[in-house]
Length: 339
Image (cartoon, rainbow, N blue to C red; front, side, top):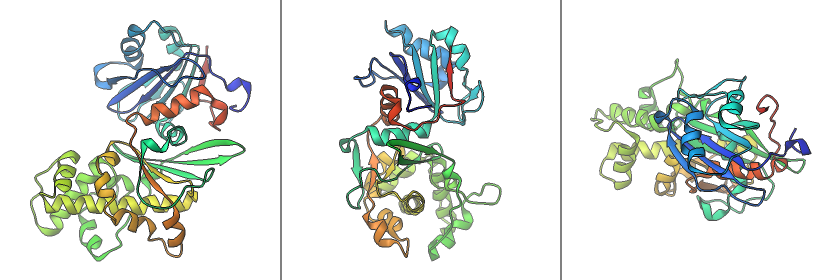
């Protein structure tokens, strides 16, 4: 569908990045403008997404959007789309009458992050080793946050094509002698340890408790922020080791995905956790784990890794898509509603 005239959206376009905790909205006025001033609300403060858009955007602006591109944390299937970590349900057909929209596209939140990788310049990224990216080579996006989001980005037929999936649920296992001491204490999900049991906020807490249990030490911290704070300040040895193991496992998983997508265009870490632990990511164990992929260690050493530091990266990706959908091979069948 995208790639022909039918793909164009009527301006102004409302864009929205809706997560479990926060929803971020903006309006793209025309094909030459970035998104306007962002409006950020807590999802818990509104019963529905329609109420949030009305209060946060429409009541505060004289601009009336014709179209909307919304990125949500959850699979898009049918005319009523529940969010994974929030009680909101997106109902595009109701939005026509409630909000005056006539054209609505609903994407996966990690597709938006993948689009952002193309939209953002290097001034919005912090490089973690590796060489120069190849211009149109494959890319991978990982986002440890509430869960572990993963998407690929492939360039084909003059389009950037995001490849969303559930890569955060791949198995992850021990490698070193120390891993074999700690991993038995990591909380399992139906008998297995997936990426999300380690590489997200609650995963970091899991690892911290497992390190403490392995050594018979107390584990007083209960939140990811407490653990990362103590680890970066070097005031708690259990927290330090937990964060180091988190970073190592992130490097291994990022390297695995880089091999899958042959990511000579770069691997991109997104979200608040990655931004907060840049010093830990630069300490060396992340790159060592990323590159430790014999027989392809030389290939891995050449691949750059970036932390996206832009606070509203997904909105930038959505704005790029709204301005020119034909640049991107985004399949909208079953995910686009027109009045």
